[in-house]
Length: 208
Image 1 (cartoon, rainbow, N blue to C red):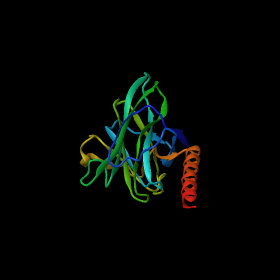
Image 2: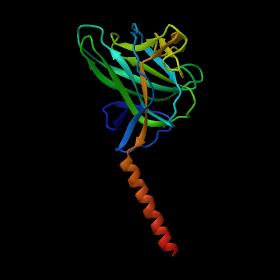
Image 3: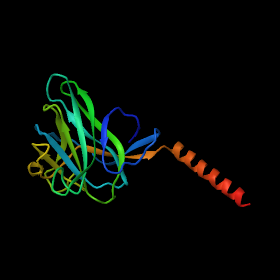
């Protein structure tokens, strides 16, 4: 899956953002797309994951409106390193918000993007999601055996956005989530390569 830059979102980035041009694309790195159940009301819900790519530029969750009435809400997403959100030693490295609307009885992916931040492939990170509307339900897959749907992480839920002690692992379950990285379009790469060729050509003529 790929998405072009320019998705409307209010974002705040922390740490060392990677500058990305207007032609950047957002591609899915890690994801778990199965849904077998939707969680009961919780202030925050999250998932650990291990990226393969060297940057993270956004994340999405699968959200449901279980009521008969439409509502508009704000989804917040946070990227943490060094542990579960707000745990001792954990660091918030990126965050953002996205407004979404769901009519009654429907579900949809809601994605949040930010300026790409550098991460270390093979290291565990934590994605934390929350909705401004308590009627929102986050999808997840629950297994009856030890084989989880997403092998490189676990689902957590909490009843407070600021108390790490209230975050608890949900046994044998994984959040329905997706995590994005940013990459230039092929056309941008071609332009870059063309520019480098020009630089080397000038240097060669000067040397001659």
